[in-house]
Amino acid sequence: MAVSAFQSLPGFRDFLPRDFAVRQYLHETWRATARRHGFVEYETPLLEDTGLYLKKSGGELSTQLFRFSDQGGRDITLRPEVTASLARLAADNQRDFPKPLKWFEIGQCFRYEKPQKGRGREFFQFNVDILGEDSAAADAELLAVAIDTMRAFGFEKSDYQVRVSDRQAWADFAKNRGLNEEQLATFLQIVDKLERDKTDVLHEKLGALGLTLDEVKEFIANPDNASTTYRDLLANLTARGLGEFIRWDLSIVRGLAYYTGLVFEVFDARASMRAVAGGGRYDTLVSTISDGKVSLPATGFAMGDYVIRNLIEETPHTLMQMEVWLQRNQAGCDVYVAIDQEEKRNEALRLVTDLRTAGLSVDYPMTAMKFNKQLQRSDQAGARFALVVGQDYPTLKLKMLASRAETTVSAEGIVEEMINRIHRPDGPLLA
Image 1 (cartoon, rainbow, N blue to C red):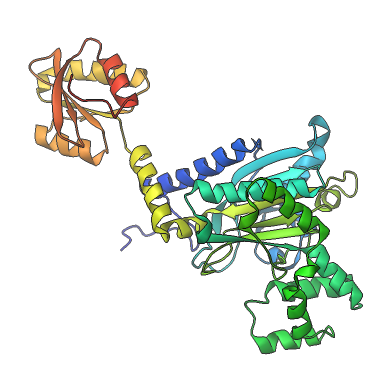
Image 2: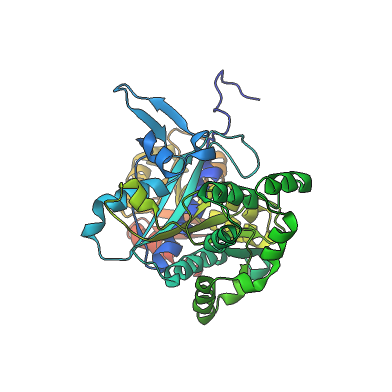
């Protein structure tokens, strides 16, 4: 039960130390994966001109904005996603960089929607994009990043699936049936909810466009409708040894209006939650944002922290991998300096400073307390070693807290001694 009169707002999160450590695990895994594939990191502001998002997509997204006027009377919004900011940034600066641009950002986003499993009103998103390359090789590179990200978290092939579609295939389908651009947008929204809407609802929506559910399902089921671009993508990924991760699935459309070509989503194998990641080609967005002044083909995807964390925690082997990382990285300190004789506090403080100056994480009791209590504190801090300063100083006791083994060491050379032990933790404790 909350004690404070104030609580975090609905859909917003506090990050207690473990939650923050999990967040760091996600971010570090994302960052390392993107860099392995040659992507460089950038960052854009949390606040943008509201017009940027209205111009980008409109529709449902425009109803989910955290939108307000600032003190200068500007209509501004907490960003609901990052792609529009990237398009703005690329349009303004693309001349300064060789193409293609391979950029990624890990940023916080905000959407006013109903909080539920896998969805909050604030979230962190991993965005990976390639701009300035229109071939299927760019789409394949992004899918390789997405697959490698899942593998970096410890997921096996049987844990998830990557479903790929092509918006252009649906555009051709609609054109052959006489649908105009406005009707195509409506149709794509229907297809996007094909697996969620009830059959009678689908019949009604499709009937209004002169279509039947059977012909739509028949189109989806026919593998001959796979586009040439998809075949190029599959050949590229097969050459990498990643083709087996991909499945052609025309029911994947993505609802946002700016997608122009291949689209994909990553789902858990049971499809028990929202998509883990999703994206696609958006070749016209930079031109739209820049009022036609700059045209850059682009493709990208995003992965949010809510769903991937849920999936990690619901999959035993990925949860175990995360727990190992947390045990290794969440510790409050490497060394806890315990003071067995209060008269030696000054000597202990000097040790603390010397060890910290050398780059080690060190904690100690700021006020006098019983020795056993200090050892409890060292465990609570997650320390790997306890260094005991007592009456025999400059001789110190060194305890390995996991095994409770101990030895004696000299205060002289203790910095080098501890660096060696911490960076070679599997070495013997006892000389």
